[in-house]
Length: 246
Image 1 (spheres, rainbow, N blue to C red):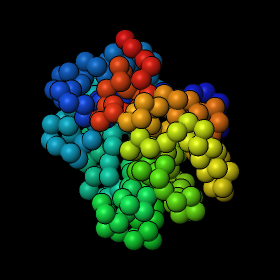
Image 2 (image 1 turned 60 degrees about the horizontal axis):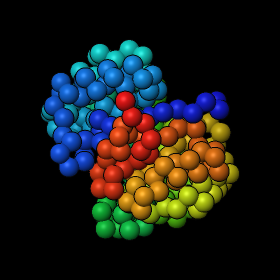
Image 3 (image 1 turned 135 degrees about the vertical axis):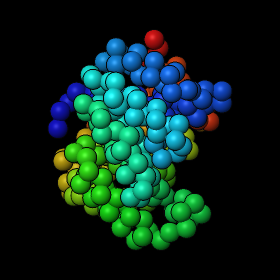
Image 4 (image 1 turned 180 degrees about the vertical axis):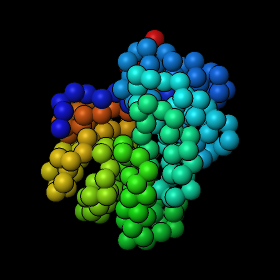
């Protein structure tokens, strides 16, 4: 795969979850145009299934942006993905970003699903997304706390179904740099078809280590995409690497 680092900006999705950072359609569109001017590779415009307002904002951005890929976040189910496809399909370049939790705690308490059910839902969701969009990204939510053997099975399955990007999320800001970098490297070494996908990191800042974890994911783990936001906007800690300013 290419050695170029891909910048995936999620200010309009994750950043909007910061207290007081909710944006109107017009505000999102204005920021998206600025991100395009910065030559951001991928702009995650929002969560189309979350609300009609977010759907319309994602659609407006998709129909306006020409020089960046526009992505929409979708849970791993047909309804969310269909909604995302509908919002994004007017873009010159677009990506469906789908996710499902894979840590034991999240599977049991949040999803109330057995691991085999999660594996099957991830596989089918990526297949459905890939049938509607050439560019599909998959994220295992709470990936940094997931069991390695199970996570490798999930990632191998979704790559086989056509996921082009695999994004490992440190959803609760749990990771520390050396361990996180080695975790990414271990996954890339153990997933048989890992060379068929670009590997990505999405790090939250609850312990103040989002930037360090992201750099470790690249420098130790071999990740080639970093998910980040402008000025440190993001839920809780805040989320994702915090180094770029307008």
